[in-house]
Image (cartoon, rainbow, N blue to C red; front, side, top):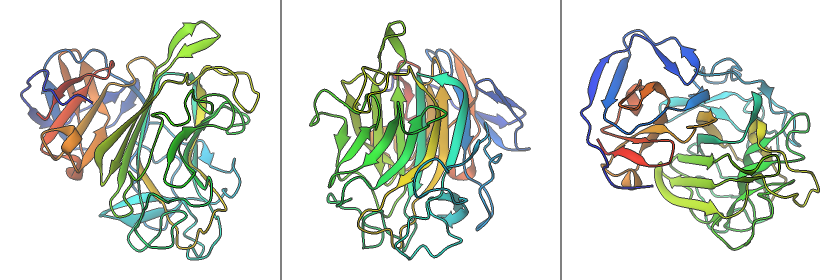
Length: 367
């Protein structure tokens, strides 16, 4: 991500009276603060089809209709070890979606995985996806025995956690899938799949993986972009995977791959599909070394699809996004080439803002 302030801007604030996220009408919270960022070169804004801050009551089942934009189709009962209702869990002054069934004893070495399933109305091939996850105080990362700890040897017994799993109905994750990320092999984080590419990347030691980038104490914000430029209609896609990981919220590592995300037939032998129409969050919990006292939790789930999906707004606590230790991705209320606006929660209303346009350029940063 660029650290150059390309275009200066004056920030104005006003009472929020209405807005639209992509093509999805939204009813504003009365009296909420709308922040307007005039400037230039913003281009066209994203179509945000899903955004969920996971706001609910501690211990209650997560609402399928609780998202501020879009709805969930159901719980994740599509992969092994899952199928239980996710609950709201309190942490850090807000609620999150649990990744294991808190109605049962999560101190035991059982899978009892929980998650949600999202259905898009049609296949999407260009998209930006982001979510935040945390290991609450006193709990362990999957595969670890120490609480609030992540080492470069985690996980230590093969693939044991797939937080987000993109695929296609009706088989979901058995064909044409993409896992983001796939925690497998000691110390490594992969963009991976069981079916077609990007399972088979051109260089297994290339830039599509990293290690030791996650925090077992702070929350971790991750963003994932795939372009949808079609090289040969109906045959292949010139797709780019851009991954941003964080430790303690701050963007620290950017991963890219030279593999075609919708490329040739992969190890599963399936013919490629030019995109996805669904995803699972939490995707899968394995039977690795231990699941005792494990409780991954999720919030701030964001999906923008189609052209301009990469255009987005961040708030952050330092002048440069790359140096920030607290970052939030917030859907726009409105977006034109010369003006964007958004409405943050109080905890998201940070000192600095950065706006990316659809070509991944930071049009303004740190304003």
